[in-house]
Image (cartoon, rainbow, N blue to C red; front, side):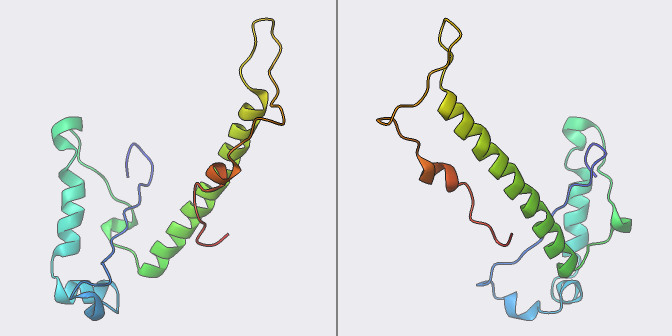
Length: 131
């Protein structure tokens, strides 16, 4: 919990890692093959802000790591909100490009046919995982 809000952290392993094939059953395999790693990571997050903020971090979910299925749902939920944000940001930027800078007499410049909007650059913010 960071400043009163749940601040998710996702643990992952690279597919090419030698332990990748052994960690098929989620958290119990992590504890089996890497005992203490999850609690060590949690403790690092508990203490890392102490030197600068003079506070220890708090944790939700009774200080337990959640399953891969829960993590996947959290990521998809955040991704959905990110896509909504990007669409709104794209609209805001397009409106700004179409308006152009305000002129001294209060009128706004309009784009001419010779001026172009880089639609490809505006639409390439993100490739969605799933909408």
